Image (cartoon, rainbow, N blue to C red; front, side, top):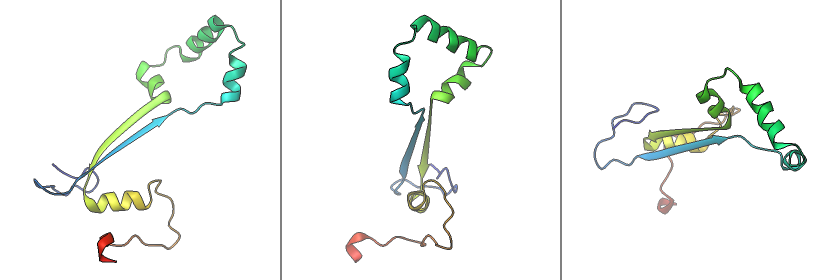
Length: 103
């Protein structure tokens, strides 16, 4: 098995981390309440019209997408330190994180 970020080979017994990311469409509850007063058949027809000709997998990805990765300890630390990969403004991620028992 390999870390899917850096390619490090993970031998049997090595610590590995499963990273599961689920991205899904958010909705506006107020807009949904307004939509409840709409004709359901009209809503369905509008959806059909707006997605006509688009592949089903593309439509599905607009609503929900999942990612699964196996990471080594180092790549897990980097991801957890900055999961959105935001600019660090001069901060550096340490080479290792001390064990909580060592403090």
